[in-house]
Length: 93
Image 1: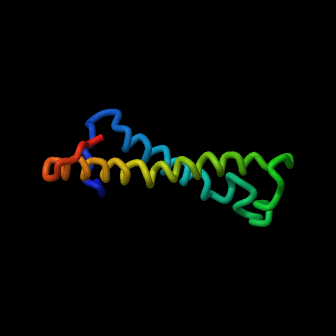
Image 2: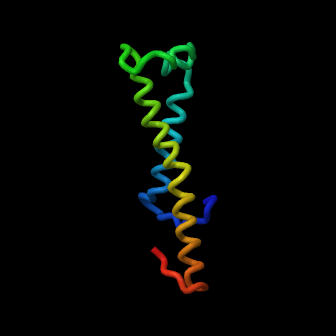
Image 3: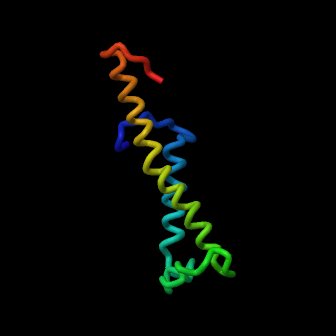
């Protein structure tokens, strides 16, 4: 909606991506889900340490959040470039 991208009525990839990103955000902010939310010093524990599985999840969730931010923006830019291609002799890819 922010970028004016066309949205499908069912199974839209932008909506599905947004739902996943929001769900992971909701899961991670609850203090009871991860001990690191209560004891912030645990973020310095090495990855191999028992109980540090939250670090792997955090890396996966970060990639998902970055996709949530970048994919719609990049697609909107591509659409704008394609729309400008009719004004200028340039090929749209």
